[in-house]
Image (cartoon, rainbow, N blue to C red; front, side, top):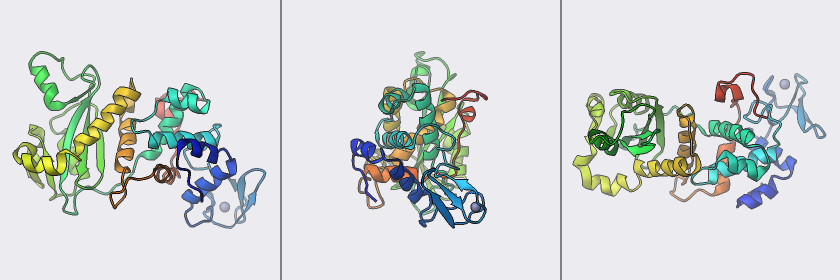
Length: 323
Ligand SMILES: [Zn+2]
């Protein structure tokens, strides 16, 4: 299969609907045969004019969109795939205004398209971090309000000096980064002393070496983990973690939130964090070589099957439609 190398080439490539269908089908059914969503059999006819398959077993028809985030969408596949290309390859993310203008749909439709795509970008991985002996760095950051993006230590210093008001309206993002591995995140609505500890216990294998700052909320981690406080390990941190570590992820997230997504509601914050984590976790391959744009695109596209997200689920507004 031809693999476009730039956004411009991708747009031209996917301007042919058959190419879109074949691309999605190849990633959705890697064994090479479309699987009937109704009976899971793989014998079928292709109805070329309707661009659907008809199952030989149960005689039901299905399109490549059925059971994916594209299902029930009147937006054409070329637009969906262009939007996906943009969201996985724009370093700082891409706003619904930009996508709407670029592919010729309303901002409201583009907003929904992007949220569905973000949903597909969630890794859904249930594997815990650690376990293979690599240490895991854990850190938190605050997002929202005037301190829209600020490291906890700095914010607390300001707070003590009377420069900041309390913690209302701010969400806490907990980031966990396995050395040489992937970042996982969790968004907490409020900061609770035991919040980050609970996240660590959910996401990291017991016995793993954990690096944190001096926040007292981490102190209980010595029960079950090898807990090391970062400031006591300064040289080590500088060499191995600081430059490629969680700070790097925070700065990517910060650029996206500050520059591209001007007003993110706390309710939607985790989706933007997931989006950034997808790009961050897929910037390099296993040999540490930068991933190409089409590789990141294909990876994302392979995640779309079986994922649905309705407008009501995104907004809580039942009965309203984005299109
Ligand atoms: Zn069937």
